[in-house]
Length: 265
Image 1 (tube, rainbow, N blue to C red):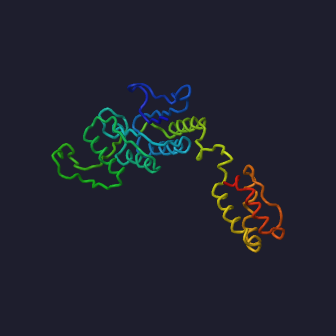
Image 2 (cartoon, rainbow, N blue to C red):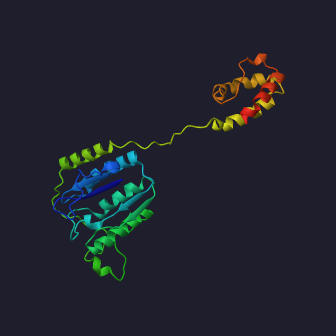
Image 3 (cartoon, rainbow, N blue to C red):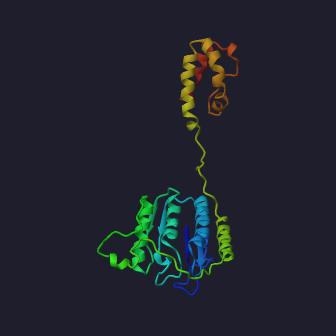
């Protein structure tokens, strides 16, 4: 499963249309969300969380490889988006919240000082550490002026991603996910007769061995054991009693135990 949120339209390499959904056995396992210039934190979050949340629900990955390209940050020399560090990192934190093993990678980013800011901040998110906004003194501090701070301020560029456009794309992608069979939470497979209720069988052996010594004990234990009897009848070769407790005797129960030892093992 590959999910991508990216700039699309007159932009290298020109791939990633919403209709690019994979082919053959991989059909619907490629989800592309094409974005226009100027997307901001609020708009990005409104599409990222519902789609990734649905992917987690339907596909249930064992691990996630997440590429955190910094060219989506405000002020990038080549990028066209308007995300803050916090908006960018909120996506990382959201994926982290599913408690699935993650391999987090860098990616694009062409304003170097902001790339350093982004990956430093997102490393802190992954480690559960808090960083001060004011940058500590270091040999490269001059590169982070004039603010000398960790976080950046988004610009006032226009967001060309209208609510209707984002909603329509989101509906299309969620609809594609409906074509996938949900992953079962537990793998079901038939059991061999020798595997039926091993703990129950051992318990029955012990109870019957003890019960054969006393008719009173048989009467007391009969009701407790009665709920096990229908299930025990499912085991091959076992014939359990149908008589009432009054009709039992230590000799009868001992004989029944001896007759069923081979099957009960």
